[in-house]
Image (cartoon, rainbow, N blue to C red; front, top):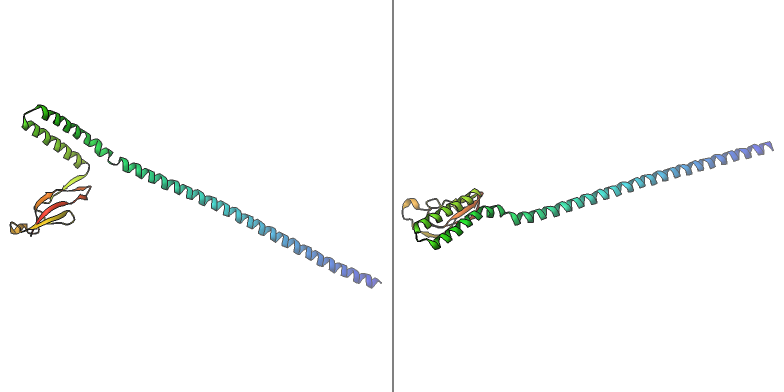
Length: 186
């Protein structure tokens, strides 16, 4: 009987060991699943933070884009404001000249006044970056000139050169804004 009891005790001990091993396995599995849940929760938090950052960055970029578009529109509306402001005194001078033409018979003074106004106008435009393209007597250059006609050159030295200028060409800050219309000798 003692042997039976001791073998039963040994079996109980083994069962206890197996049960404690099972309990340990369950604890380990629980710990693993809680770690996985914790790491999963950490990942979810990181994903939420990154999504938030992305949305904020996208919103900032969209606001920047809208603001720059608005600034460009406003800039284009007022781009010529300073040129017009500088030309207003020239317009005032023309108005005074027109009034004086009505009351005077002295054509020489009117011519002189108109010449002064023209020079003021030309100087104002030059100060803003407008330059005349020199064409007459220059070699024909398609970058600055547009040939309207070809005529026989009056002299040998005027071959492939501009012999007449029908309309002046202009550059604004070294960019051609109007090509000179010229007649080229051939």
